[in-house]
Image 1 (cartoon, one colour):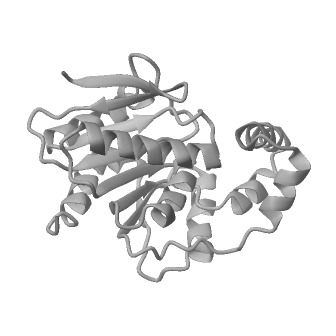
Image 2: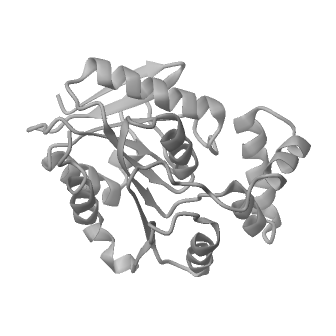
Image 3: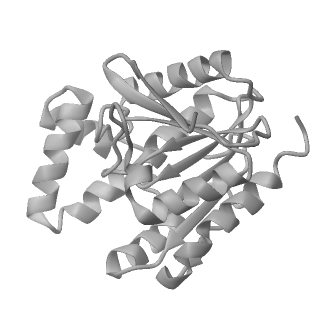
Length: 240
Protein backbone atom coordinates (compact mmCIF):
# COMPACT_ATOMS: atom_id res chain seq x y z
CA UNK A 1 0.00 0.00 0.00
CA UNK A 2 1.56 3.29 -1.14
CA UNK A 3 -0.78 5.58 0.75
CA UNK A 4 -3.95 5.66 2.82
CA UNK A 5 -6.57 8.42 2.77
CA UNK A 6 -9.05 8.87 5.62
CA UNK A 7 -11.27 11.56 7.16
CA UNK A 8 -11.18 13.27 10.55
CA UNK A 9 -13.67 16.04 11.36
CA UNK A 10 -14.73 16.28 7.67
CA UNK A 11 -11.09 16.84 6.62
CA UNK A 12 -9.20 14.40 4.41
CA UNK A 13 -5.80 13.16 5.56
CA UNK A 14 -3.17 11.06 3.84
CA UNK A 15 -0.36 8.76 4.95
CA UNK A 16 2.43 7.93 2.48
CA UNK A 17 4.18 4.64 3.21
CA UNK A 18 7.84 3.90 2.42
CA UNK A 19 8.92 0.49 1.13
CA UNK A 20 11.49 0.11 3.90
CA UNK A 21 10.32 2.13 6.92
CA UNK A 22 12.87 3.40 9.43
CA UNK A 23 10.21 4.15 12.05
CA UNK A 24 10.50 7.92 11.73
CA UNK A 25 7.52 10.05 10.69
CA UNK A 26 7.18 13.46 9.04
CA UNK A 27 4.09 15.67 9.33
CA UNK A 28 3.81 17.90 6.25
CA UNK A 29 1.85 21.14 6.77
CA UNK A 30 1.23 22.79 3.42
CA UNK A 31 0.99 26.33 2.14
CA UNK A 32 -1.99 28.24 0.69
CA UNK A 33 -2.29 25.90 -2.32
CA UNK A 34 -2.14 22.74 -0.24
CA UNK A 35 -5.03 20.25 -0.24
CA UNK A 36 -5.77 16.64 0.60
CA UNK A 37 -8.87 14.89 -0.80
CA UNK A 38 -10.16 11.31 -0.95
CA UNK A 39 -7.53 10.12 -3.43
CA UNK A 40 -4.66 12.61 -3.73
CA UNK A 41 -2.95 15.69 -2.31
CA UNK A 42 -1.09 18.78 -3.51
CA UNK A 43 2.32 17.25 -2.76
CA UNK A 44 1.66 14.30 -5.09
CA UNK A 45 0.12 16.46 -7.84
CA UNK A 46 3.02 18.93 -7.99
CA UNK A 47 6.06 17.54 -9.83
CA UNK A 48 8.69 19.20 -7.60
CA UNK A 49 6.89 18.23 -4.38
CA UNK A 50 6.35 14.65 -5.58
CA UNK A 51 10.11 14.32 -6.15
CA UNK A 52 10.65 15.35 -2.50
CA UNK A 53 7.98 12.88 -1.26
CA UNK A 54 9.68 10.09 -3.25
CA UNK A 55 13.12 10.96 -1.86
CA UNK A 56 11.79 11.03 1.70
CA UNK A 57 10.01 7.69 1.21
CA UNK A 58 13.17 6.18 -0.31
CA UNK A 59 14.97 7.31 2.85
CA UNK A 60 12.41 5.31 4.89
CA UNK A 61 10.15 8.10 6.18
CA UNK A 62 6.44 7.62 6.79
CA UNK A 63 4.83 10.91 5.74
CA UNK A 64 1.42 12.19 6.78
CA UNK A 65 -0.56 15.32 6.01
CA UNK A 66 -4.03 16.86 6.34
CA UNK A 67 -6.22 19.24 4.40
CA UNK A 68 -6.41 21.25 7.67
CA UNK A 69 -9.47 23.26 6.55
CA UNK A 70 -7.67 24.68 3.51
CA UNK A 71 -6.37 28.22 3.98
CA UNK A 72 -6.40 28.02 7.76
CA UNK A 73 -3.84 30.79 8.52
CA UNK A 74 -2.80 29.12 11.77
CA UNK A 75 -6.33 28.88 13.19
CA UNK A 76 -7.05 27.12 16.50
CA UNK A 77 -9.06 24.36 14.82
CA UNK A 78 -6.23 23.65 12.35
CA UNK A 79 -3.73 23.36 15.21
CA UNK A 80 -6.11 21.07 17.14
CA UNK A 81 -6.70 18.85 14.09
CA UNK A 82 -2.94 18.58 13.47
CA UNK A 83 -2.53 17.38 17.07
CA UNK A 84 -5.36 14.86 16.64
CA UNK A 85 -3.81 13.61 13.40
CA UNK A 86 -0.50 13.10 15.20
CA UNK A 87 -2.25 11.06 17.93
CA UNK A 88 -4.09 8.96 15.33
CA UNK A 89 -0.96 8.22 13.31
CA UNK A 90 1.13 7.35 16.39
CA UNK A 91 -1.61 4.94 17.53
CA UNK A 92 -2.21 3.33 14.13
CA UNK A 93 1.33 3.13 12.70
CA UNK A 94 4.59 1.66 14.02
CA UNK A 95 6.45 4.93 14.49
CA UNK A 96 8.77 6.62 16.94
CA UNK A 97 6.55 9.05 18.89
CA UNK A 98 8.91 11.98 18.23
CA UNK A 99 8.10 13.22 14.73
CA UNK A 100 9.66 15.66 12.29
CA UNK A 101 7.59 18.55 10.92
CA UNK A 102 8.02 19.97 7.41
CA UNK A 103 5.94 23.12 6.91
CA UNK A 104 5.72 25.42 3.90
CA UNK A 105 4.52 29.04 3.64
CA UNK A 106 1.36 29.58 5.67
CA UNK A 107 1.83 26.12 7.22
CA UNK A 108 4.60 27.56 9.40
CA UNK A 109 1.95 29.40 11.44
CA UNK A 110 0.55 26.02 12.54
CA UNK A 111 4.03 24.50 12.95
CA UNK A 112 5.24 27.24 15.32
CA UNK A 113 2.18 26.73 17.54
CA UNK A 114 2.68 22.96 17.52
CA UNK A 115 6.27 23.45 18.68
CA UNK A 116 4.85 25.06 21.83
CA UNK A 117 1.92 22.66 22.33
CA UNK A 118 3.71 19.39 21.51
CA UNK A 119 6.97 19.79 23.40
CA UNK A 120 8.66 16.41 23.68
CA UNK A 121 6.79 15.01 20.66
CA UNK A 122 8.70 16.91 17.94
CA UNK A 123 12.16 15.81 16.86
CA UNK A 124 12.94 18.64 14.43
CA UNK A 125 11.22 21.25 12.26
CA UNK A 126 11.97 22.38 8.70
CA UNK A 127 10.26 25.58 7.52
CA UNK A 128 10.28 26.19 3.77
CA UNK A 129 9.64 29.79 2.65
CA UNK A 130 7.71 30.27 5.90
CA UNK A 131 5.21 32.93 6.86
CA UNK A 132 6.17 33.26 10.52
CA UNK A 133 4.20 36.35 11.48
CA UNK A 134 0.65 37.22 10.43
CA UNK A 135 1.33 40.77 11.59
CA UNK A 136 4.24 41.30 9.20
CA UNK A 137 2.55 39.37 6.40
CA UNK A 138 -0.52 41.61 6.64
CA UNK A 139 1.67 44.74 6.59
CA UNK A 140 3.32 43.50 3.40
CA UNK A 141 -0.02 42.79 1.74
CA UNK A 142 -1.43 46.26 2.60
CA UNK A 143 0.49 47.61 -0.39
CA UNK A 144 -1.59 45.38 -2.68
CA UNK A 145 -5.26 46.18 -2.06
CA UNK A 146 -6.65 43.20 -3.98
CA UNK A 147 -4.48 40.67 -2.09
CA UNK A 148 -5.13 42.41 1.23
CA UNK A 149 -8.91 42.11 0.77
CA UNK A 150 -8.57 38.49 -0.30
CA UNK A 151 -6.35 37.71 2.70
CA UNK A 152 -8.82 39.40 5.05
CA UNK A 153 -11.69 37.28 3.68
CA UNK A 154 -9.61 34.15 4.23
CA UNK A 155 -8.64 35.19 7.76
CA UNK A 156 -12.21 35.96 8.84
CA UNK A 157 -13.36 32.61 7.40
CA UNK A 158 -10.46 30.65 8.97
CA UNK A 159 -10.87 32.19 12.41
CA UNK A 160 -14.67 32.48 12.13
CA UNK A 161 -14.80 36.10 13.29
CA UNK A 162 -15.20 39.71 12.11
CA UNK A 163 -12.55 41.68 10.20
CA UNK A 164 -12.30 44.38 12.90
CA UNK A 165 -11.54 41.72 15.53
CA UNK A 166 -8.92 40.10 13.27
CA UNK A 167 -7.20 43.43 12.59
CA UNK A 168 -7.18 44.30 16.29
CA UNK A 169 -5.83 40.90 17.30
CA UNK A 170 -3.09 41.02 14.67
CA UNK A 171 -2.08 44.60 15.57
CA UNK A 172 -1.63 43.57 19.20
CA UNK A 173 0.64 40.64 18.30
CA UNK A 174 4.26 40.73 19.39
CA UNK A 175 6.91 41.90 16.94
CA UNK A 176 8.99 38.77 17.53
CA UNK A 177 8.27 35.09 16.98
CA UNK A 178 9.51 32.94 19.84
CA UNK A 179 10.84 29.64 18.49
CA UNK A 180 12.89 28.62 21.50
CA UNK A 181 11.07 25.40 22.31
CA UNK A 182 14.22 23.31 22.52
CA UNK A 183 13.43 21.80 19.14
CA UNK A 184 15.98 22.06 16.27
CA UNK A 185 14.66 24.35 13.50
CA UNK A 186 15.93 24.84 9.96
CA UNK A 187 14.53 27.64 7.79
CA UNK A 188 15.10 27.32 4.06
CA UNK A 189 14.11 30.13 1.74
CA UNK A 190 14.10 29.82 -2.05
CA UNK A 191 14.91 33.26 -3.44
CA UNK A 192 12.48 34.11 -6.23
CA UNK A 193 11.28 37.66 -6.90
CA UNK A 194 11.26 40.81 -4.78
CA UNK A 195 8.78 39.44 -2.27
CA UNK A 196 11.24 36.70 -1.30
CA UNK A 197 13.98 39.23 -0.66
CA UNK A 198 11.62 41.25 1.56
CA UNK A 199 10.73 38.09 3.45
CA UNK A 200 14.40 37.27 4.01
CA UNK A 201 14.91 40.68 5.66
CA UNK A 202 11.92 39.99 7.88
CA UNK A 203 13.53 36.86 9.32
CA UNK A 204 16.29 38.99 10.81
CA UNK A 205 13.70 41.25 12.44
CA UNK A 206 11.30 38.71 13.89
CA UNK A 207 13.24 35.57 14.85
CA UNK A 208 14.27 35.76 18.49
CA UNK A 209 16.55 32.72 18.59
CA UNK A 210 20.19 33.41 17.61
CA UNK A 211 20.57 29.67 16.89
CA UNK A 212 18.28 29.85 13.86
CA UNK A 213 20.12 31.02 10.76
CA UNK A 214 17.97 30.85 7.61
CA UNK A 215 19.48 29.15 4.56
CA UNK A 216 18.88 30.90 1.25
CA UNK A 217 19.00 28.98 -2.03
CA UNK A 218 18.57 29.99 -5.65
CA UNK A 219 15.58 28.63 -7.63
CA UNK A 220 17.82 26.41 -9.76
CA UNK A 221 18.91 24.58 -6.58
CA UNK A 222 15.32 23.50 -5.75
CA UNK A 223 15.91 19.91 -7.00
CA UNK A 224 18.42 19.56 -4.13
CA UNK A 225 15.80 20.28 -1.44
CA UNK A 226 15.07 16.60 -0.77
CA UNK A 227 18.73 15.87 -0.03
CA UNK A 228 19.02 19.02 2.16
CA UNK A 229 15.93 17.92 4.13
CA UNK A 230 17.16 14.35 4.62
CA UNK A 231 20.60 15.46 5.81
CA UNK A 232 19.02 17.72 8.46
CA UNK A 233 16.45 15.13 9.55
CA UNK A 234 19.07 12.37 9.84
CA UNK A 235 21.24 14.58 12.03
CA UNK A 236 18.48 14.64 14.66
CA UNK A 237 17.78 10.91 14.81
CA UNK A 238 20.72 9.68 16.89
CA UNK A 239 18.65 9.84 20.09
CA UNK A 240 15.44 7.81 20.01
